[in-house]
Length: 354
Image (cartoon, rainbow, N blue to C red; front, side, top):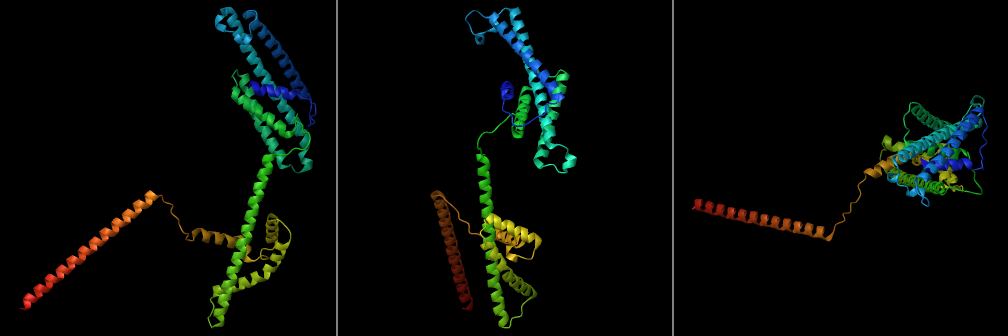
């Protein structure tokens, strides 16, 4: 809380202001109260420091003060002074929040103007207003707690102060930029998104060409079978018609592809034309057929490679050898038993004949 409050105080002391804020009556009142609280806090801080100096010996620092060695009356006086000082500091922080919130409100009100005459509010302005409303509700809850005598949690107060400072920075209040600046993370993220879109665009073209080639091969096979006297089925006739239409519409698609645009630009052009003329593009360059191809590829059998260590291979080989030996012994036993059984039957039959 102390670091956030000190940072906010230093921020207030800067003279570079880029956002123009109209000085309203509410701002002047809150600023007067804030200045009075700061003056009282400085007096109490000086009085508390003097009290600490009076409780230690000459030549010693205040940080080395041990309250256990101080007289009970002086110790109680120091603790009371410290508690009053921390309470006054909380009051300064709360009044600073109220003052900064009023400044943000005045700035947003002047920037947005009369929304009825504009007829449209940009998305960023709406997000800023929504964030301001959340901060206002939190600070109003803090004010109600202080009115009832409850203590505001220092960690929660520090988080709210940080949020107010961040909103001020994004609105340009008490912040200024010199020279040319850039956001490295935003540029990296933009490059990653561009690379992902380029890959998806290239994959879209490759899959479309693959589908087109497969359709041509299949239709040539159907045409050759029809020349030999084969009667085509209705489904095959529809396939021939669709492929013939794809061949005709493939020519303007190739012309568009030859235009020097990026893959992302081609995808955007294709998307715009497809919304206006859905049947302009070949069916192999539509999402419906490409989704079917992805579904087929995901369910298609693929070779599975098993990575084994030499111990696992040795165990598997020994198990296979044991199985082969046991299976061979079983078959040898069955053959021997069956041959002996047939021999005894033959002997019995010959004895009966005699």
